Image (cartoon, rainbow, N blue to C red; front, side, top):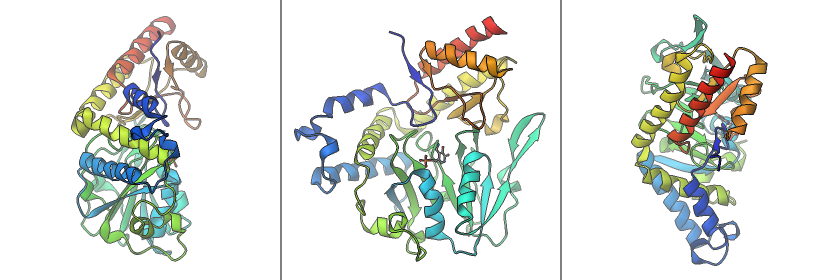
Length: 362
Ligand code: PMP
């Protein structure tokens, strides 16, 4: 059978062993004789499951004790409203670092709740996109908070160094497309959020990691469902959580542990990205515009000479079982997303196909 590999930017590929596990217990979860989809969220077995999810998530990311983990609804876009409502004052100037599509959208939403100071840190040199080094970011002196996106899923741009600022600055980061792909020094952040549908599981669930001294100051108008303080006090259950998404995350976290944790994940992710970037670099047939130091390890966009050629590439790739390689509607081209579940074999198959396509169409 033609082995299929899913290069989607999210919801994304899941390990086959995880899918088999779900299939096996879909009708009979934990020997209960009913499905996880039918379990009441206040059932003791479900509570045990959610406690284990938090334990494993904390273990993998080595989350310090003074940070709380919240399971939220509304995706990462929900967080674009949630963190301003919980942290900022209406007339507060907040530094929003702009590196691409998602950081721009976050700032646009932030405009409803604060005065965003949008700092575009990208620049072009020799037709390559570079990001300014952290110490060159022109931050506002009076701003207490800085928001940035660790990995721009659409643009394929990442800030690999953790921003280090004077201790009175509080850093908020969108890790939606890179969480659990490598270790993170959580202690450098005030808040990290990530929707689950790329490296953790399926959509409908967003992980928030927040330093506990930042709880307790929601604005009066904050909708209860976005109120971190209320969510934390309700201990997982302010309302019915996304049961299946949580369940899947639990299995994925165990899978990541079984693979050797985040140090091993990072090693493997670097190897996969290197394999694909090497293919792009060695030829003038495929082009990626991002400077070496800011290349994403998760989402790798590249372009061919003409739209016709790109369409041909996508069509033929699909026939070979290389799926969902089409770039985002805003940026076009090709994009390969190489999240944790993508095996090296999948990337090798893509690279082999790229060689073959180049040979036939150059
Ligand atoms: N931020 C980033 C970096 C993303 O990749 C995405 C989704 N692709 C979002 C935010 C929005 O996430 P959601 O669809 O869960 O709201």
